[in-house]
Length: 114
Image 1: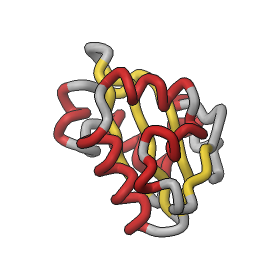
Image 2 (image 1 turned 90 degrees about the vertical axis):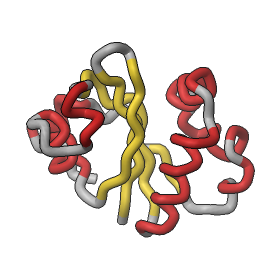
Image 3 (image 1 turned 90 degrees about the horizontal axis):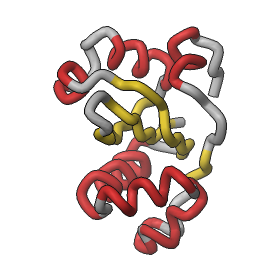
């Protein structure tokens, strides 16, 4: 199982990534060992999270969010995580499930158990 996530980072920027272990990845971002981007733009909030079955599907979604969506579209997706099929119709047939209500703090504390 893999997850795709959107973080709100310092400077009100958005970062999208994938991981099989959400809590481990959030701690890595916080500690400066995640992505190069989050070293200079530390995460402030976990804005959206989706569960998918495999790495290939997660990578396809991550790429589409990063490269095909504008900031306004990403914000719309954050507001309605179940609107993936509307914003990215080419991915509508893939099994993505929004995981609502998970916070960065829960992940950092290790209390999220996907």
